[in-house]
Each structure stands twice: as structure tokens, then as C-alpha cells.
Image (tube, rainbow, N blue to C red; front, side, top):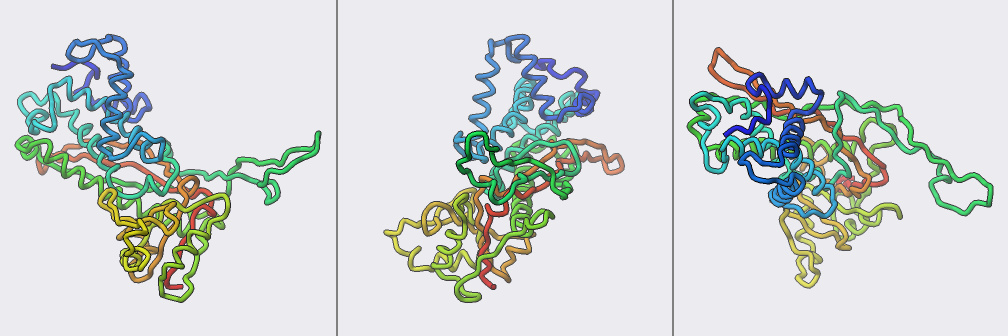
Amino acid sequence: MGMGVIKGLDDGWISQAKQAKQAPMLWLTDQVIAKFESDGKDAAGRDINVGQDLDRHISRTLKQAGCADDGSARSMHAKAAAIETYGVTKELEARGIRPQFDTGEKFFGPGAENSPLFPALLASTFIVARLSAGLVDLLTFADVPVNRLSIDKVRLNETESSRRMRNVGIGDPLPRTELSHVDTNIKMRKYGRDFVYAREVVSMQPLAIVQGFIGQLARQVAVDETDEVIEILHAGDGEVGSAVTDTTPATDATLVYADLVTLELAFNNSYAGRTYVSTAAAFATILGFTEYKDPLANRALTMDRNIPSVPTPSGMGRIYRWQSTNSTYMAESGGRILATDPSLSAYIARTPMLEEQDSIIGRGQQEVALSYMAAVIKGDPAATKSLDITA
């Protein structure tokens, strides 16, 4: 059944990718695309248009992630995930492996010639499942690939007067804006899990069950990422002046409808709050407001990724309930509502998924590290506001 896309698969396809200085998953996709383009045939010998086939895979991934192809950060994240997982999908097809129907015996049965591809199946499941939880893509404007352990932050260097467009006389110089480094180096942090299994256990299990549990791990990582973004949007990323400027309620420790209006109006002309994140306690208070109980106000509760949300008073943004486990700013003992314009709030720099497989001989187990490095870098501080209810 093999289509021979990977040369020397048993010698370690991950090592081959690293020798080529490519991310393993993307290397695999490149190998598949090159093979199809060269042969003009798929693994079954049928004529194939690689561009159209990849587009169909992207459409399926978008649907799986629950998002439309609308140019949003969310859809861009899903497209990137689709490209990463395309090669794995086609390799599985070539080997007659159908994860929705087969058991792990397809990887670890007699001969076990497909076992080196098992980490790729786990990684592709992890990558797609991570899209279905958390709020990272609604709080950030970009998710960029990097291959380093830290990020040197850059910012527009300009004076207050040069920020504004203005008429200049013929021959007079235009206002000058420079993209330059700031004195801030942001360290990458590691995300992921070490997944340990015995071949005998996986061989007997339906692959769909294994994928289900990998999806659970990925969704928890998405929650952790969201907490990290929320923390950085509040505290800043280390650059002087990057911490949020709080908005306060009219009455200390009391949230009323007018405070939500004040938070919306806290943004200047350049930005508008689109994504709001509320503690569970504050969200419960919002649902109790008369303005949200009125059926004619069109502020009904909806669910997105199993996260409840309601519109802001203007209807221009949405307030999501978030039960944080790691962000000190969103602790239930306090009470905050974060508001951000994701067009320039923050971005994530992320290394490729690392899939390393090791044998734990003493216990007869296999270990796959599903991990990557990531950093959250704050954009324009003016794009983020926070209502500190306890202030």
C-alpha cells in the first residue's frame, strides 16, 4: 500500500526533517506534495491536482475547527494547521490506515512498518484539536512561526505629532515613522505533553479513542495558552509601558451596566473592543442585568467552543466567560473584564511542533513528546483595556 513518499522511513523521518532544517510536519507535507506533483498521481494511481486536493483538505480542517474562511485570525490558524497535517493525512491514506475505523494494530501489528508514522498521527490530532478550545485566536492578531528561543521585540518609533496624518507644504518632509527594536527580549516558553503508551495497549485500542484523549490534552494546552495571553495583555510583556491601564467602576467592588458602557468607550479613535473576557462571577452579574434579561434587547447568550458569551452593550463585541486556572488577573477572588481589539493587541510567536519518540525499555513503553515553544508579545497597549471591578 505504501506510495514511497518518505525515503528511509524506518531510519527516522523526524531526523531527516531536522537534517533538512525543516519542521517535521511541514517536511512531510512538502514530501507528499512533491511526490504528487512529480507523478501527477495519488497513492492509488489516480490523477490528482495537488492544489485542489490541498484546498479540500483545508476546507475540511476549517469545518472541523468550526470556523469560516473569512480571513480572520481564527481561519488563518486553521489553514496553517491544515497545511501542517496534509502530509500525514495522505501518508495514512497511502498505507490504508483509516483512523476513524482502525485500531492501533495498523501501526504496531505484524512487521510494524508503519510505527514511525504514529507520532505524526498524534501530532496532527493535537494540532487540529488545539483550535477547538480557548480564545487565543480571538485575542491575538497573528500566530507566526519562529525557530529561536527568544524574541527581540520591535515597535514603531515615532513622536506624538508624527502619528497624525497632516498636510505638509510642497517640498516639506513627511512625518517619519521607523520600525525599530525596543530594549525588550521575550523568552519562549514550552507547551505540550509527554504522551506515554505501551504498544500492546495501543494495538488493541481503536485509533479514534486514542485521538479523543490526545484531543483532550490539546484542548487543555489551548486553555493554558489563553491564560498566558490574558496575563500578558494585563501585565505587559516586559516592555516599559506595556501593562494595561485599568478602567474602574463607578462604585468600588460593584459592577453595573453603565460600567460596561464605560469600558467600551475607554478605547480611543484607533481601536474598538471586539473580544471581552470576564471572570465567571462578573459574567453571572452581567446576566442578571435588566438590560440582558430584556428579550427585545437582543443580547441572548450564545456558545462558541463551549464558552458562553453575550454581546457588549453596543453589540460591536462579545463578552466571554472565562474560568482561568493560571492568570492571576482573572482570579475569582478579584473581578475583572478584559477588553481588547485583536487587530493589534498581541501576537504569538511559535516554534514548530516537535515530535520526538523514545523507547522506555525498562517499562516496555513508548514516549512521544508533543511540544513546542511559544511567546506572547504585546502589540499596541492602547488596543487593550481592563475593568478592575475591585478598584
